[in-house]
Image (cartoon, rainbow, N blue to C red):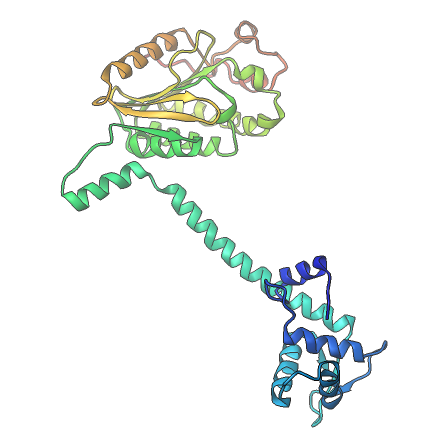
Length: 349
């Protein structure tokens, strides 16, 4: 029985024929039954089917017991049906309805199998993505050599990988007395569907007493109508109420707009470690500790603090500030932040 490539691919997708597209014995017997049938279908005896098999290919050496087993498999697969299952002599029927029922069954079985594999693959991907190779290497050295070593520098690629490094090396254990300085000098790569999840980790650090300072470029006003980030930007701005609540409770989380020259695009933890973003697309950063380059960290912190003093708190913006920063008074950011201006005093640093 010959079938075209398109049909073969569809049947293979359903799991009906093997990947090499060789016609199976099951398909041969189903084809014989269908060719013997008329419309409407007439029930066929076993002998009708077996004799036709031998007639179409006299070289076939198939036992009747084997053909019975294949017919049972076709019935179980719902590709054919028995006229009267309780009758002593079974008669078989196959038509477009039985084939459709059988293919639907095979399709559903294949879908369940693929969904199960998809779930397993997704779980493995999530587990792999969650691994921090820096921490893993430290544990490996400790286990194998019996000593502790600190990762002093590494290259980090991608927003999610950078955030994992930040979590493991600062955000997860930042506490009262610690200062986390972060800049958002390149907007595009950072405003995505995981932005709010990343920001929550900064909130959690602030709740534990860490002083979180976020310096945001006024270039964000040029991007607020960009359709590729608009929805995610709205979600981010929707967290303003959370910031207001924290500030009312004395939690040190503040963000400022800054319109000056772009210097170090950084996230620093005190003066102990820093992620220095060196490329926007794709996002690439260098993670260093004070042991590796203390001067670079000190310079970055001094630069940040200088710009921080020039910045304007996002919760203290007035119409003149928005105008000075080149923001549209009807823009998304202006509308949301204007309603919160002056609600609470800016903390002293």
